[in-house]
Length: 335
Ligand SMILES: NC(=O)c1ccc[n+]([C@@H]2O[C@H](COP(=O)([O-])OP(=O)(O)OC[C@H]3O[C@@H](n4cnc5c(N)ncnc54)[C@H](OP(=O)(O)O)[C@@H]3O)[C@@H](O)[C@H]2O)c1
Image (tube, rainbow, N blue to C red; front, side):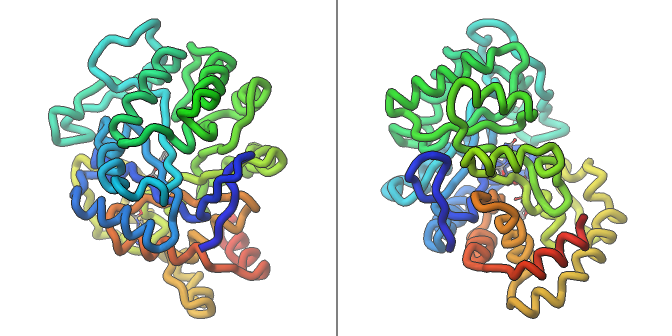
């Protein structure tokens, strides 16, 4: 496994990170707790020390599972979670935030617990309350990386950053990250404080951060680019087929990218990578992960896994070094 530092800190993080949205079950057709815990342990045993979760993932459930898995092993993980999405059924402390999404049991989950209205919501008091709840669920007294999950246009970015800086001074968080920002919002955060991590969608087929200049801004300012959905929710694994069916409460069941024709076209394109798999002795997933962290000096690839098999396969990609000519070849195929 290769390791890099986290933002301006001296914390060392693996280039392959473990994402735990799927472990929360919500929007992913459920998850099996004991296998989720095995996945987290397998990640740690195979060199992944960077684990990302969020209160939103299963409405606290993903954090609880991560907390259980890390009991007695907290020191071996760099733990990242988030704030900024209100999913509680109780009224918000002040103001309304912005409507984010309706989560209904029928469309997105099969449990009554999933029926909620989600808001993008950031206030100094709510950030503090969210952090306290996360610390409880995660069974820890400090979050290594605290990230703003989504941006709330009704909140002040300066006030949000000031709150995060206070939490850092108080020793409750060790580094600061932002996610789902525009280049302008990122610049506003930087005016007030230091951003250690930019967490954005990035994969072979999702290149917005390269196109809008944020990948460059991150590199020039010593931020880590923590790339989410690097396997495009499974589309880039080559393991889906046009016959694959998704549970009704799996969001991919209604995503056009996962329609049979789209899966077939992607698999045909991915098949062109076969010579590289032979050359390096890698699985397709490992090649895709290695390409992703090779795109920048401080890129961590945040792969979602909810089985020990997937977690260890993904971790093994962390030691791969691809030659420039092969990176160019992959870029040419997927540009
Ligand atoms: N900041 C944000 O707004 C945001 C948004 C999205 C995601 N994230 C973070 O990023 C993480 C990763 O993103 P993601 O979960 O959307 O998608 P992803 O990592 O691109 O893909 C996950 C999918 O890939 C499959 N997979 C993983 N490893 C595999 C392997 N070795 N072989 C075959 N299939 C494999 C999983 O299979 P199974 O279905 O069998 O588990 C799952 O279907 C999340 O868990 C979360 O921590 C953040």
